[in-house]
Image 1 (tube, one colour):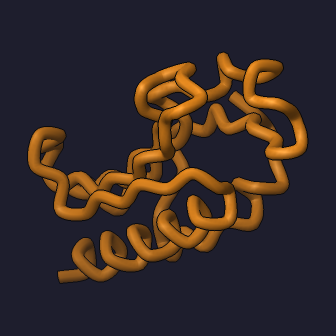
Image 2: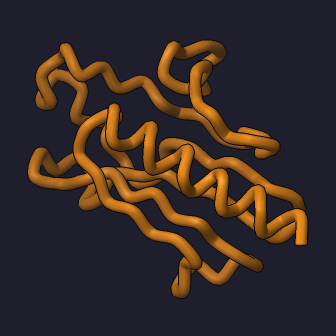
Length: 109
């Protein structure tokens, strides 16, 4: 796991706790030179015992793929309560923020 990364260090995850961080993607580097970083398990953030924010790249290692940000409730991975696809780091950051906001709100109920 990365100890420090400008992308993840500056994420707005509300009251979430980052439990997994294997993010090491640099948009300035060609995809092929870092394709092994584009995998299905990149970031996980927990919001209490019932909510998880998950970030991955699908299909793994595929330059035609996309980031997928999912909000998971009660470990029901087949029915996410939020799902956002994106391709750029800027849109990924926004998708994480919006999903974190939702999960943070849900966890307080």
